[in-house]
Length: 107
Image (cartoon, rainbow, N blue to C red; front, side, top):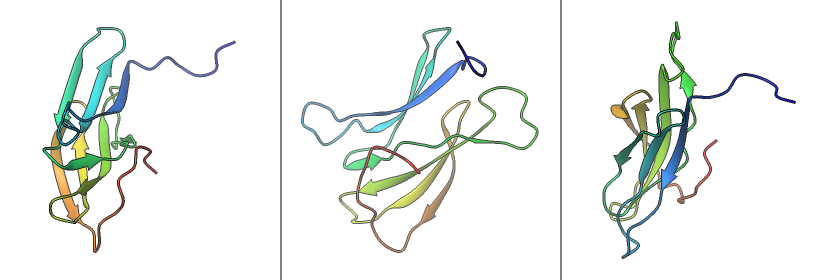
């Protein structure tokens, strides 16, 4: 039994490279097309799992935003990053008063 509609897109966190220091990012998977797009965070910047927030007047499934907290290990800071969900382009960055410990799950 299925409840609800199938999703075309999925969003996830990408994990570090072989050195364990770079390669973190947000990944958008196209379930039907197999396409994959990644927004890379940069070295020593761990992104939490993004939470999809629909935009006003949604037409397409990916019309919305992906807020995520960045744990910047070099700057000892945690900016709030907001990405546009359809193309993973940065739309805003907010600064939090202290660093948030890195984690995988968003809330």
